[in-house]
Amino acid sequence: DIRRPAGVSTAALLLTAASGGGIVAYADSSRAEEASEPPPRKKKVVVLGTGWAGTSFLKNLDSSRYEVKVISPRNYFAFTPLLPSVTCGTVEARSIVEPIRRMFDKKRKDVAYYEAECFKIDPSKKAVHCRSAVGTNLDGNGDFMVDYDYLVVALGATVNTFNTPGVMEHCHFLKEVEDAQKIRKSVIDCFERASLPNLSEEEKRKILHFVIIGGGPTGVEFAAELHDFLVEDLVKLYPAIEEFVKITIIQSGEHILNTFDQRIAVFAESKFQRDGIELSTGFRVIKVSDDSITVKCKSSGVETLVPYGMAIWSAGIGTRPVITEFMNQVGQGKRRALATNEWLRVRECDSVYAIGDCSSISQRKIMEDISTVFKVADKDNSGTLTLKEINDILEDICIRYPQVELYMKSMHMLDISDLIKGGVGDANKESMVVDIEEFKKALCHVDSQVKTVPATAQVAAQQGYYLADCFNKMDHCVEHPEGPLRLTGSGEGHHNFRPFRYKHLGQFAPLGGEQAAAELPGDWVSMGHSTQWLWYSVYASKQVSWRTRVLVVSDWTRRFIFGRDSSRI
Ligand code: FAD
Image (cartoon, rainbow, N blue to C red; front, top):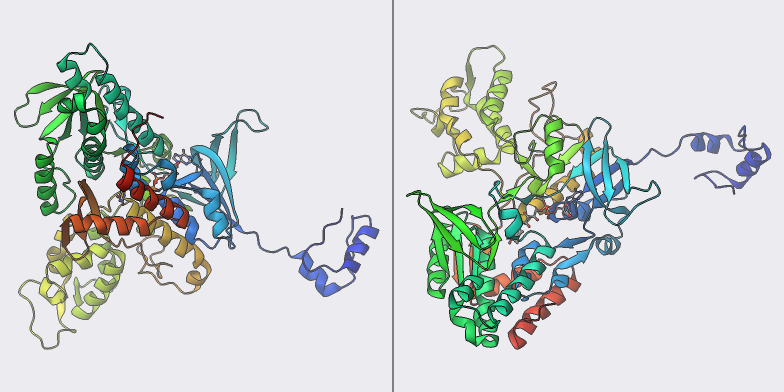
């Protein structure tokens, strides 16, 4: 079986065959030269994870430039913002997932997918160790290794119980599609159990007490869904036990939705109070047993036992074991998430990038970086620079650290002369000489203004898109860098790319009863019934395919017409 290499004529191949395949004698010498130089090997890109970050990267990557391999134990993408709707059957689980192979196929991507879990990243060998999630391979144990030139870690996060005793054993979580399906069954279970004969009223109250631990967006959204499910559907089917139903949210902070605008938190709290959802703010859960939750009042220190029928823990995200192990290897052992630079490359680790919930951009060095730039610019060591020089440096710093620009804007310091004590006159501004230390003092608030980028789907998707864009124009940007000055390494030249910038597009909090609250860009806040319709349109438009869009919209319509299904299947 003779395979014809690219650019080799039949005559040449015949000669090769005639020579016994040993010494190759090509008839056409120019072709021979071509054939002796095999096409450059495509760099191998390995992507771990098929969540928001991983799929956004893959969708936007020009896969013809790389040999791409994807590893994830989940062969589908899940639209997590609609997970709370799955818990009560407002939307079916299959309506919010899209098979990963279908996503590649539609985009005509040449991508290899392995349904497996990565259990070790080995940056020294540039390889990842994986275990098949669907059975064994020829080696018999299902383990295999994949090497890479570039690794994109998009493994997301896991639940964080803060080592609270009993949480793992007795609480539900809401992180994966399977979690939502389990919750749906458990809610119905509670109603069926409370309907059994020979139960005391106290017992019924306990069984029908639904406790949500964590008043963040997920906890609040689930509470709202559950409330709607109870009042719109279940009370009609279980009228005898309606009076025993109770929903409680336990929140350690003083308010629920504390990452939202305060107006939204106030609106949500008053709506929940009207709905009869109990808010226990200022309480911390310290233990969960099979029938009660021990809570401690943060102000008085008094401990109370709360009997419950079903508890859902949504009080934060933690680190996956594979990430913890990797962080230990690269000297980041004490962190919650992988620290990357502003270009999303894992700090102190070549060719490994981290995006989404498993990563966080560490920008604690702003003042250090600013000092370095000043030192470089102050060639004669005079301790001063002209205003023009400072302006140029700041422009560069603003590309690197968007929050410096935001800070200056928020403080109305668009003109940097305002930053300097005493200000300056208009004349000869540019050539005015400024004391560097004085200027640094004026800027020193910036470090404290650094906000960490939140762990949301929006951030994960934007990071995936940004990184794919960098990979797509890698060759071009090596020759024509577009980024700010380099401060590390040789300290010379420019970074190839502009750093990642997160653009906040707003966030929603559905509050039940066809009402929602939204924080929109530009400090806009919108609440009420009309916002719920905005929520419907945004979430319908954000679906990853027409298939899921049609399914989700038809689920909403079905719910409007027939209500939710309460079968325990
Ligand atoms: P994920 O989406 O979690 O993806 C991680 C991927 O890694 C998965 O494919 C997983 O299978 C894979 N993986 C895990 N372990 C391994 C392993 N060992 N080897 C290989 N692969 C592995 N954000 C918003 O912006 N708006 C919202 O309204 C919103 N609502 C939410 C509601 C709920 C109920 C939840 C749970 C989250 C919500 N979020 C929302 C947050 C959002 O879902 C996350 O921020 C987002 O999923 C993070 O994306 P990611 O790609 O980093 O991680």
